[in-house]
Image (cartoon, rainbow over all chains, first blue to last red; front, side, top):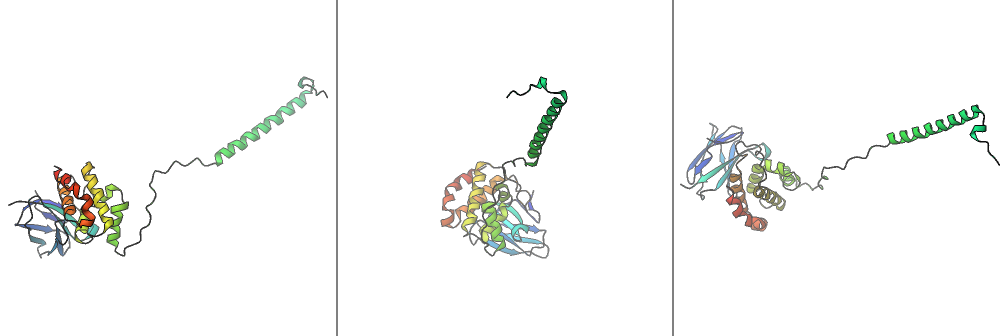
Length: 85
Length: 162
């Protein structure tokens, strides 16, 4: 099972400190990962194969990551839950 | 002076008098009917809320839209755009007091069990109230203290949503 938005596909659950691969189905050049904290939105470039491999921050289990491709109402969004290793 | 009774009047006069009376009644009734038809029926009381007062533009179209969602938009619309709203709040507009009113509305709706519409621009998040409640808790916990403080007591409740 995968978590997916109109232009995003990834695993719904990731391990803290691990990696997550996001498939980007839009023309967005970057994706943003937010943990709900100020300054904790990180941008990652989308590779030529339209995927992004993202290091999962060392956050407590139960943290939810909000991932987006693009901005505003045209962006795609997906929620991913982080579990403890 | 004694007026002649109807019985004493010639038949032609009586008929003419009755005709005049009937014509007058018909004319009066017509006027009443015409007046009744020309008056528009009372309009039912409007159920639409009055338009919100105009807010001066910030010069940033996205911020203006987020403020509209936060304060003026129906709850359903705000909830439908919840992921976009929280992403922009978390990444760019964290210090805007109006946007925190939107966080408060979403928080209350989540705790009240208001049905969540599917999140716009996202598939698969619709029914997952638990994930959204946790994200909301994170935003409040790590928000600017001056703006998020009134919502801090609700973080525990949000995290308890199964």
